[in-house]
Image 1 (cartoon, rainbow, N blue to C red):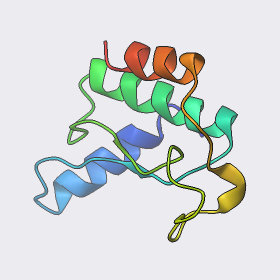
Image 2: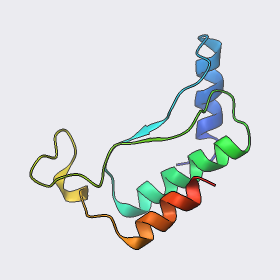
Image 3: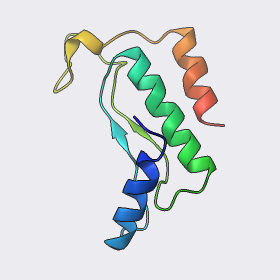
Image 4: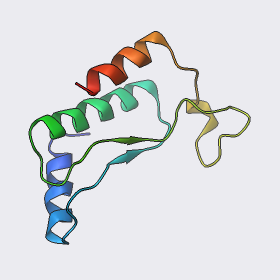
Amino acid sequence: MRSDWAWDHGCGLCAWRSHAYFPTFAAAPRDEYRKALEVVSEAVQNGVPGVADLHLEGPFLSPKRPGIHNPDFIRTLSQSDVDALCGASQ
């Protein structure tokens, strides 16, 4: 995922008269999830048009009820996950 991804999508949505959007990420491998946090956090900090914040779906879901999410990527919340989430919210 490139850091200019959010800029490209934000500008495109603004052209359609959307004032803001929340990029949404489903449960994914840990590295991809962390990269998504970094990219959107950077976009928000840099004032990318339209990017309001991040919407996370999973991966901290019940393995018994994963819904649409790939069960391979569902996991329990760890301290490193909390640190990554808190760091992205700065």
